Image (cartoon, rainbow, N blue to C red):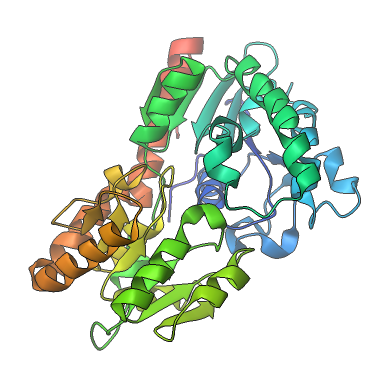
Length: 385
């Protein structure tokens, strides 16, 4: 368990701001650990779908914006894209000394009051405005949407730049995000990798490694799962795909007999699924990407596209192998190299590599960062943090 910060009566009051809580992914896992560290801090968010909350957040003090009253917002949350900035700005944070924003889009725009300190944990700058073409090129959008979106995203991009000075400090979740924060916002940041509960995966009890390769992912078009499906169709090797998402139907249509879709896997069953695979396939470019670390924590290597967060999480030749280009030939070549060298990958060394991403490491680095910056800004210490 992460040691919580006990907010004493005269200590700083902390608030956490998160973009939205209507899905479960890496950002929500970070939020859950922040909540465990600061259990007295309320969480402010634009919208919420309580059925999709992680168990760790079920009893949290979550305060939702006026957007929650919009018709069909849980289902059609993307249709309300233009409303999120004003929803985040509407929160009254005047009673708080420290604001921690967990942001992949909007939360960094939260408005602090007075002399409060705002620390932004940046999962990524708003990727759908900075990489519009790469983000939506495979999405199925109507002609009307394609005509309207560029104007809307131009306005959101302007807002994103205009609000870059609201955080006093930035923490980036990977080296590539640190570079984007510098290039797009002109801001320095410190890299602190997201937390992984490595012990849960290392303790998976199985009889041995199976014959299947594995993907654990939300089934979105931009994640390039189509490339993996095509590669395993051609290689005629077994691939299990765990996850749900809007691109599922298209992927299933292109899948051959060696590709199996197993849907959403429970947290209880996921460690054994990782530990039983030959390797995890990671074909997309992510800002960080937790699944390679989870697979490594279970002692299994990764075959990853050499870009984005994988440059931080995959040690080539130790915890996995890279493929250089997002092409069929490049991925199949990496799979064949892996098959040839599979015995050279040591589960013990792979697990040791994963340990630097452990949640205890994350918690210590976050608390040290906030405490030191708070002292620099106010001259006050935070005993117990």
